[in-house]
Length: 234
Image (cartoon, rainbow, N blue to C red; front, side, top):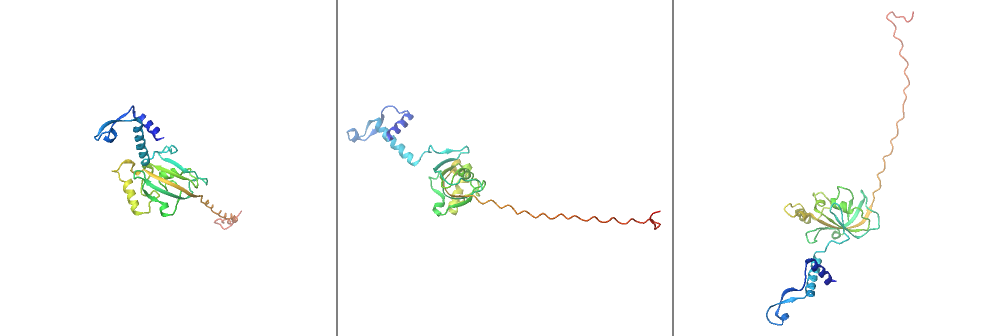
């Protein structure tokens, strides 16, 4: 319950016994302001309400999040049942992208455009953190990918690039501004993998015909050259 959670929090804070506080005169039975004792339960209820309000505004990282060695944080809302992504696949996906420290306001969303994003899954073609974060997903899956700045927009060529010029300027002015805090470029991508298509293998080139081997007939030896006297033999 909220009281139990508050009691645990209070115990961690070292709270012992009643708390002295100030109350208006109606509570003290007089018309002036007086000092009174706040019971432990009243304090716990107040602390629980404050903690609940804070948790609503700042939800903690879920226990189901998986943190990778590189610093990514991943959470699967839905595990897909379709084919798994492999390098070179053509992906059709929806996403909502936000800066982590901008109160969750999206800077790009394919849902808003009502058009999924089509991209080849290949290293160097995507944000490093997005490439790593998509690994292991299956068609139909939905995943949240929390990307630290060093795996996010490290240059202006990394995809996805917001198509809206105003949003693109705001994004770049934040992530490439060295005067801001180091976490300015932390990103949150909520991704829905709509389709995975493995492109057909490239056809092997047709074998070239081997030219036939032409054997040249041996030419007859040239006639012997007569000596200076004009006769051959004895």
